[in-house]
Length: 264
Image (cartoon, rainbow, N blue to C red; front, side):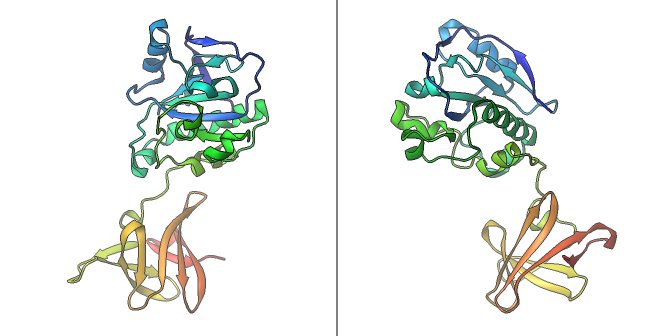
């Protein structure tokens, strides 16, 4: 399904001068909270800046369009002639959790990338700054274009490129379940030693005790083996990396009321 686009024309545009488009560039607006607000800013000639589209977190997956893709938006200095760009109503300083709290924005961003990539035949790959500079075709952030005359760092180090590219390839932005504590088959227990402990109710093997570490990593007690929770296609999955047994996977089965079972 194509995105809905609302036209809010910006006068801050010019001809590409015959240049072909090879880069899809992601920016953060650093202030505007809606695509309408952003569009109103770009609609003033005194702004002297624009982007092709703006995306907020509205659930209708409607985006603002300010400059036609055939024209040059004024958004990434010397890279403007060969770029098509989006301004997200977001901040480069956002944490991973803050990005995850805006699933509609990520969904719309991924779909917009898909539409632009299909139109221009651009590969759905994230480029390094060096690749972008050397003529490669793909997806970059504003921060990757420092060589083209800008000093910006958006969309920030926590921007989920892998997620939006997966959406562009036909996936979904469904928000993953939070790690550990909010998963229904895991219960916290008091522990006199730091960190806190958790219990997983494993259908086949009974309860197993885990201790939580940074970044969602856990360790089975006792032993040095590491495990973590991940989501696969929106289904809560536990991946256990066991030094003796190898990788094992467990799915949460809602019918089992808070238990997990080994995947088929």
